[in-house]
Structures are given as C-alpha cells and as structure tokens.
Amino acid sequence: MIIFGTRGKVLSNKNATKKLNCKNCSSQNTVTAFTSFRYFHIFWIPFFPISKKITTQCSHCKQVQYQNELNEFELQTFKGITNTKIPWRFYFGLILIGLFFALITFTIVSSSIETGKNAKNPEVNDIYEIENYNNGKRTYTVYKIVDVTKDSVTFEMNDYEVESVTKVDDLMREHPNDYSEKLTVSKEELVKMYKTDVIHSIHKAKE
Figure 1 (cartoon, one colour):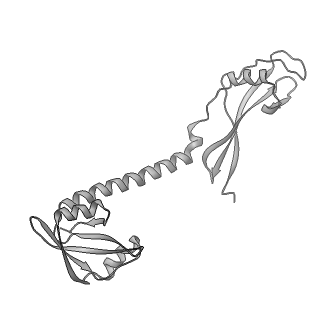
Figure 2 (spheres, helix red, strand yellow):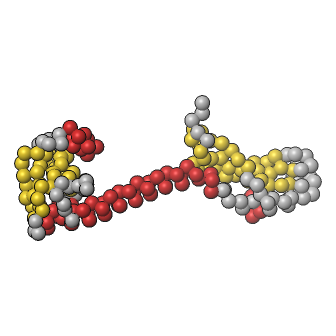
Figure 3 (cartoon, one colour):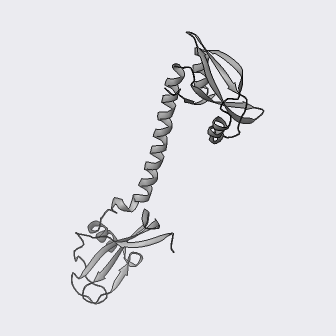
C-alpha cells in the first residue's frame, strides 16, 4: 500500500491553441502546449505541488517536446498561453494543517482568556492547576479554594505532585481529598500568579 509519494496531473489549458510550427515535420501552426505538474500526496490527499512544466505536441506528427527541450522563444511563447494556475485542491493537505494549527491556537488563546477571567473572580471549590519550578525541575499540583474574602483567597494545597501537566487529571482523580496545608494570598497576588504562568488552568466549582 502506497502511503505517500508524488503523482502527475495535466492541467486543462483553455488558451492552449496551436501557435507554432513543428520543427520535426514542418507543419504550420500544429504545435499545442500543455501544462503538467507533479504534487506530493499522503494516501489520497494532495498536499502541495512540487513542479510545474510545459509539454508540447504536434497534432500532425505527434512529436512530444518537454520543457527542457524548448528554446527560449518557444518557452516564453508557451508560457504566455499556458499560464494556468494550479487548483487550490492540490494544496488541500497544507490547508488542513493550517486549519489544525489555527484551531489549536484559537483553543489555547480562548482557554488563556477564560483562565484570566476566572483568576479575577475566584470562588470556593475552584481548583487551580499550579506549576512549580524548583532546582531546574517542573512539577504540577492542584490548589482548592476554601475561602474567599474581599481582598484574599485561601487555598488548600494538594499533598501530591506530578511531573507532567497531562497527569494532573490523574492526580485529581486519585487524590481528591489529600489536602493538608493551607495558603492564603491576596487577590492581587492571585492575578500575578496567573500572569507569571504559575496558574496553568482553573477548574470552576461545579454548581
């Protein structure tokens, strides 16, 4: 099974009319130009074109000439009448990749905006994913809000840490009640923790 590779395609040239005489059989105005290109694909999905060339054929003697066989005059003449753009569908793979990264970026930005809003409006039972950096090592844990006053927020700090942010959900599931120490910070400090990326994300309290 071919997973990836290249394929060829001949473009439909509406303006590819007979313009030149054939050097092989001397027939008049019998040489027609066509544009072909090759594109890279993965499975059946075209990703991007990798080459574009002009090919000519005489309708009388059927001689075929490739772009590297054309002289400068012939090349410029045929470029003028075969200026056919490669259809957008042959960039489909690149478009998909672009949309994928655009979606990831949008999701990250939206999540960051939402986290910033939540950091300014703390509520009891909100759970904060916290990133710590000590001795060149990053670890992650969770803080749970147990009290909110006009100027401050009090957390209970989970007793456990994990080495990857992807494992925070496992920590929350496996140690839902393992909070033994408390930490009180001002609301200004809380916002600063968000701006300096100490707060990785916020899980709002379930209503």
